[in-house]
Amino acid sequence: MIVLDITIVNIALPSAQRDLGISDADRQWVITAYTLAFGGLLLLGGRLGDLFGRKRVFTVGLLGFALASALGGAAAGPAMLFGARALQGGFGALLAPSALGLLSTTFSDPKERSTAFGIFGAIAGGGAAIGFIAGGLLTEYLDWRWCLFVNTPIAVATAFAAFRVLDRDHIAKGRRIKLDLPGALLGCGGLLAIVFGTSEAVTRGWSDGLVIGSLLLGVALIAVFVLVEKRTAHPLLPIHIVADRNRGGGALSVGLAMIGMFGLFLFLTFYLQAVKHFSPVVSGISFLPMTAAIVLSSTGVAARLMTRVPARNLITPGLLLAAGGMAWLTRMTVDSPWAATVLPSVLLIGFGMGLVFMPAMSLATLGVAPNEAGAASATINSAQQVGGSLGTALLNTIAASATASWLATRAAGDPLVRAQGAVHGYVSATWVAMGVLLAAALVAFLVIDHRPAPVRATAVPVGPESVPAAPAAVDGRPSPRAAAVADVRANVRPAAEARAETGAERPRTD
Image 1: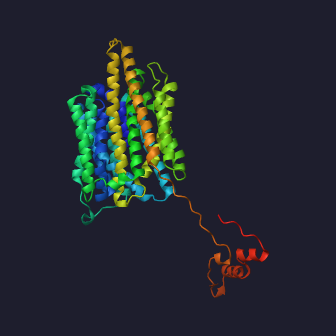
Image 2: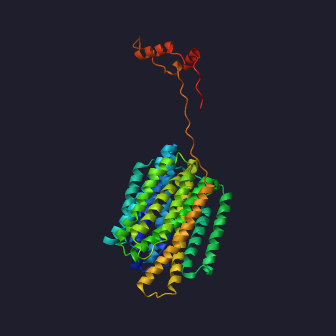
Image 3: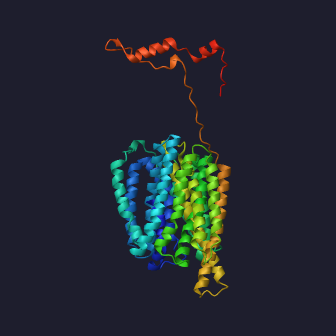
């Protein structure tokens, strides 16, 4: 449902923008308000699951998500829609780490763990596919508002199922640790300031005082957050979780990857609908090959190889494939055919991302104590959502600036020229996204060093001593099995004695 809500709104965004009169500079807040609240509050949501029980936090998050979705569908203006999206993100921050924490603590065997995370990735990919198709159908045949209303029955039904199915894991008051509220305020405030400054650069420019001040304030708050967490007895984010090179490297790689991915969703949606004039339904179907590639690579490739090859041997090639898909997309023009330009790029990006997300999610909670599973789960989710939030704001800024500069020297009144200017902006932002993916691949290759544990063979003794004991008698008489065992013990000699007697050469030891 969380993944569905991101993709379904992407398809509905052009219609919502026209209906509510949202400006081009502010349109990304429909996505950014959700991802910022989600990413900024995930650490707090993960810790609340550790303190009060994941079943309770999960259920509250579902009911709150249902209410926020209903408010968003009934939005009368941009501000109400942005606020409802922020509420959705906040309650989503309770859902995601609780679900991932339950998954991590339930499955500890490497093979079971890889299968579970493969299914987890496939469900997430399926949610994206349903979001693209449902967004197109609801927008075209009903109204864009139903893209938000549809979450309410899903969330209510899931909350009822969670109440009935999940085991009770309530934690008594005497066993709870103190909640780190200063850390939550500092961390969320710093991320909010950074994304606000980045988004305001669309209209104000990067040299504007408010933009520079917001960015500096955000960096300062994050720095203070790190210092506070080091000195707090019960930190919101234990530093040793992100200090581990595998967890930290995986989170950083995913965060950088999402900068490019969220920008791609935004630009391709507007390219297909505003430039190519695809209907919302056809636009949604156009994303299905990417979703299918993600599901195929995560369940068919990554899940099988995760217990056999080092994690970076999956994550690094995956990021390079995604960067190649971005490079292919930079060839798009107003007249580019979808099958020759968009299709190859989304297949490369989807297959590459399937190799990235599953191993990174598994590394995020690998070897973490159960009472810190929520915080560890929230770390990777925070990196994912904050990366998406920053990517949407940053790449939207780059695209809008490139389009404005291109149109400044041309006849902007011509519809064809305006379309060419929009595509020029999308291509400029796509080049930046490709560079970010290449940087993520370099980070994964240099930082992540996790290797799967080798499978150890267990020696099996050969000889009469290896025969299990059996009941000596049944109803006062020797049992057939006892007689057979006695015969073996009396007549079968150990293999070592037989070799010594025959002069056979002793086999080599591995």
